[in-house]
Length: 92
Image (cartoon, rainbow, N blue to C red; front, side, top):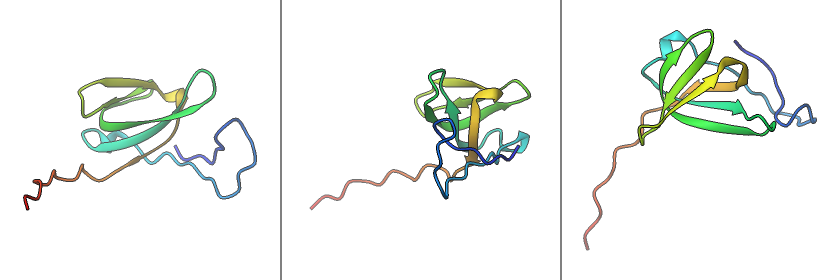
């Protein structure tokens, strides 16, 4: 599903393009999805995509919390790179 939508309910914002680039083959991958809240605002969910079907997407955050997003509330989404490895502190 690819769509050109404008955040905030239709205000003109030149150059803003939100696209859905997720599907079944992204399950198990790190993703970010943008969803519309009941009050119309948008928010992002970042984590591993655990489920993708006709009803919902489930994204599990690094803290282990699962967020279920109804497909009708999804505005945009894409696969993102794995989290960077944690670096050891530099000791002077």
